Length: 289
Length: 178
Figure 1 (cartoon, rainbow over the protein chains, first blue to last red):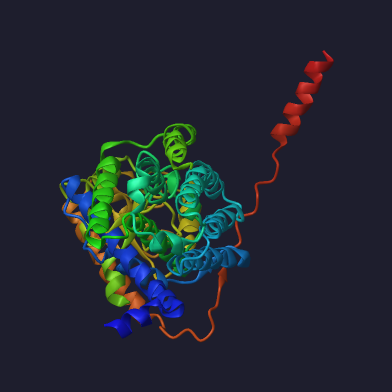
Figure 2 (figure 1 turned 180 degrees about the horizontal axis):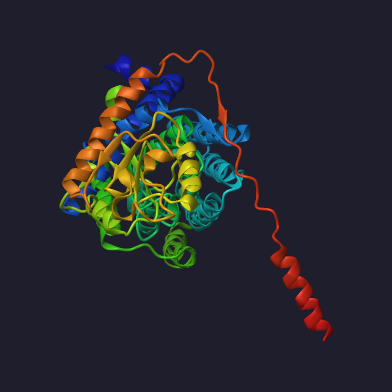
C-alpha cells in the first residue's frame, strides 16, 4: 500500500493516469448530465455511454476541413487542455495553469475565426465574451489561494490541512458561476451550450467536422473533468465531503440549467462582473492579512 | 465503431419548400412524448456534424442547388431520409411547373417515409432505419487509412458585388449634388 502511494506521487505516473482518466470521467459526467436533464424534462434520455458512442462515431467519419490551419487550432485546443490537466495534477503554478487554459479556449476561437463563415464568427465572438466574463473571477480565486497559503503553487493547496471552502465560501459561489459558464449551462450558455445544437450558441463548433470535431469534444471532456477536479480541490481533506460537494454543485447546475432560459452575452458579462466579482472581492478582504 | 455509429445518428433537417406539416411532426419526435434522444438522435444545426439528412418538402429548381450543396458538406458515411410524400414523389405538388418531383432527382435517398405528414412513430422508424444503413455504410468503408487524406472543401466563391451598391452610391451622390 505504502509502495503504491509512493508510486502515485511520481509526477509522470500521475500525469499519465490523469490524461487517461480525465476524458473517461468527463464523458461519464456528460452522459449523466444528458440523462438527468432528460429525466427532469420527463424524457427517457440517451444511454449513459452516449458521449462515448458519439466520439467513437465522429472518429470514423471522413476527415473534412476547410483549410489546414484549422487542424492545427483543433490540435492546440486539445493539447493545451491536456497540458492544463497535467499541470494541475502535478501541482504547478496556478497562474500558469490559468493562462494555458485560456490559451486553449483562444485556440478554439481562432479556429472558428479562421474560416469564412458568419455563424462561426458570431459563435467565436460569443465565446470571447464568455472568456472575458469568467477570467477575472478565476484570477481572483488564484489570488485568494495566494493570500491564504502564501504560494501560487497548486501543491500548496493540497498540502494545507484546512479545506479551501472554510476560508473562501464566497469565492466558491463565484466559482460555481464560472463552472456554469464553462459547462454551457443556462442562463450562461451563450456559447457552446450542451443542449442547443441547432442554434447560434454552438456557432464556434460549426465548421469543425468529423475527427476534428471529435478532438474538440474530447477537449470538452477534459474541461469537464478539470472543473469537477477543482470543485473537489475545495474540500480536499475529506474525499467523501469533496464528492458530496461535487454532487451538490452538479445537481444545482442541472436544476438551474433546466429552470432558466438563456440570456444575452451583455447580461452575462454585466452579471459576472458585478455579483460574483463582488462576492470574490468581499472574500479577498477577509483573507487579507 | 459500427455499433457506435448505429447508436449515435445526428440529424440535420433540411426544409425544401415544405408546407411545414412534416417539419412540425418532425419536431414532435424530439418532445418528451416520443423522445428521439433515447436513440442517441441529436438534432444538429450544421451539416458538417450530421450523419443523417432529413429532407421535407417537394424539391424545386431553386432549392435543388442548396440541397446538393448541403449534402456535399456532410462528411461520409451519410444517409438521406426523405420525410413525407413530397420528397418521395412530389406529393400533391407533383404537377406544379417548378417542382422536380422528389429528392432522389437531386441526391441519392436511402429511406423513404411516406405520409402527409407521417406519424412521429413512422419518422422515428425511418431515422432508425437510416441509422442501420449508416452503420452498414461505415462497415463497408475501408477502416485502415494508410495516409490521412484530407478533403479540402473550398467555400463557395463570394457573390460578385452586384450593381446595386454602385447604383445606390451613384444616386446618393446625385442626391448630395442636388
